[in-house]
Each structure stands twice: as structure tokens, then as C-alpha cells.
Figure (cartoon, rainbow, N blue to C red):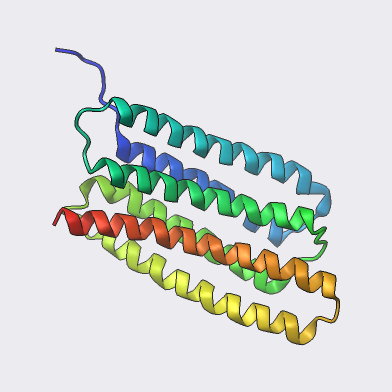
Length: 207
């Protein structure tokens, strides 16, 4: 009998969402104490996390093609890995937009948005930590409901933020920059919900 430890997909899901949590914290901390001098450094730091999430996903896919038996359906593993990777990608995209559009001042609504993203990622991580026990755990479903709630908060924040921007701002360049940045912030919440939807689908299939 081989003593080699089996590859644990559930642990890898947790690892992937941890990259998202770290990325969300970097974004929120930067927005809280915004300093353009730190932007380049934070972009590198964020990209390293995004690369780590990519490598985690690729490792999972490489294992999957050689695996005979998987804990859940292969298609679900592939979809969830992709959706978790998208969370980190979308958070990085926000930071890149801030850099590309040369944003020098953070709107209060953007700071509020980054806080919602941190909460979304934390709820998603909590769901992933209990996902291995999804047939018995009530925590997973509670976390999914919380992610859905936070995504709705993000939707409302996006609508009101964009309206406030177009009502109050007279600079067309600033309008373009912040319209795109707010759109990317909203996509972060969407990405968390998409991952949660895959988890919910797995639970329904296996109930």
C-alpha cells in the first residue's frame, strides 16, 4: 500500500481563495491610506498573488487529467477553480485601472467598495473551509447567503456611485477613469457570487 498522501482538492480551493483574501486586503489597505508612491510596489505584490493563484489552478488541472476518481464531478472542480481564480484576477484589475488612469485621489465610495470586497472574500473563504463537509455543514450555505447579500450591497453601491459621479463630476477624464474603476470593483463582488453559485450547484447535485 502506498503511503503517499492523496491530493486534496478542497485544500487547494481554500488556498486559491486565500490569494483572493490577501489581494482584497492589499487593495483595501491601499485605498484606506492612498499613496501613489506605493502603487508600483502594490501592483507587483498583487501580481505575485495573482500568479500564485494561477499556478494553484494549473496544478489542480494537471492533477485532474491524471486522476481516476475525484471527490466531486470533474466539471465542477474545473469550473470552481476557474471562478476562484477570477476573483483574484478581478481584484488585480482594479489596481491596474487605478494605475492606468492615473487616479490620485480615492473616492469614499471606492473605499466602501473595497471593504465590501474584503467581506465577500472572507465569506467565500469560510465557505471553502467547510466545503469538504458540504453534505453535513450548515456553514457553507450560510456563507453563500452572506455572499449573495454582499453582492447585492455591491450592486446598490455601484449604481449610486456611478450616479453620484455623473451628477457631481465635470471632468470627462475623471468620469471615464472612475466609471471603469467602479465597474471593475463591482465585478469583484460578482466573481465571488459566481464561485458561490458553483458551490451551491455542487450541493444541489449531491443532496
